[in-house]
Length: 219
Image (tube, rainbow, N blue to C red; front, side, top):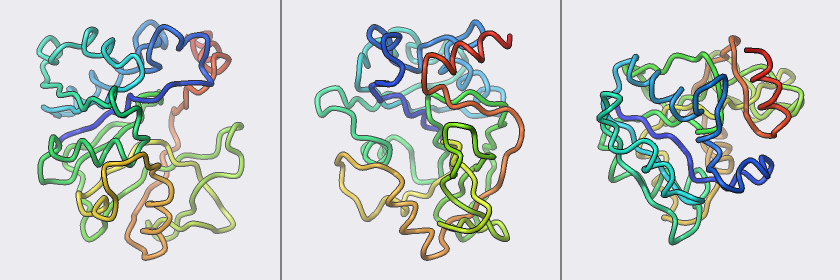
């Protein structure tokens, strides 16, 4: 299984910190967000990572190189000319780099203790989402869960963590275009094609300077 880190976003809510750096290169507890991911991926046996880049995207390859210094191979899916394609569009563009097997995707701006599973089995589903209890900034949640199947709505809602496992078939209906992931997910959820689980340990969405400062002050 290969992994993809989504790192192409502008990070508008993180300004002015992101005026000179892509958000995944911001430091959390003394280490860049993206390096936290890479070290955990290496620890869990992943050998190949694809990273998409757009805004200030050249800075990420400059920082990470080809991954050899971390014991992993890193390939880049460059969206600098087209502009960021959002999550689904970015994944669609990167599919040729991801091989034919199911793959892991993680948002470059989350900080968490979830352990990526290189042997994860999707069984008969097209995707599997890691959900978390709702943080203050997303109190209504995104999705629900019943018997390990993700629902669009129920009494108990959870927040999508930005971590998921996907098949190539999940992206068959879209072209390489600017496209968010949420509509694709909701459509597949209606067909009961997505499984999920709730992760209750440490997880943070580094979405604003104040959230980043709070987490760094906890160190």
